[in-house]
Length: 98
Image (cartoon, rainbow, N blue to C red; front, side):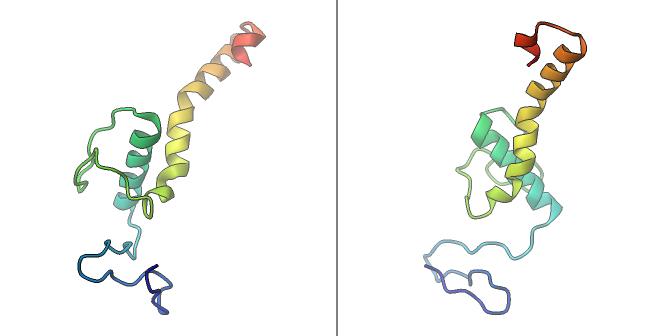
């Protein structure tokens, strides 16, 4: 267990040879990278590497990546929702629309 800094309530930097510390600030780019990695991990959909992203297909860091999970879930579910709404709007068979 990592020691917690009282000033920020975030893990302190790891000692040499330990795991890297969680970044203090979540920038929009880091949020987009986290969402893209979540989409890649949970859906296996190919997503292009974003600028500033190291290895796009590396194992996600689950201390940081969950911040992008709500957006990733929306992106993954969006095609199914669109098909369902289109089928309901076209008054197709309820089994398909619903």
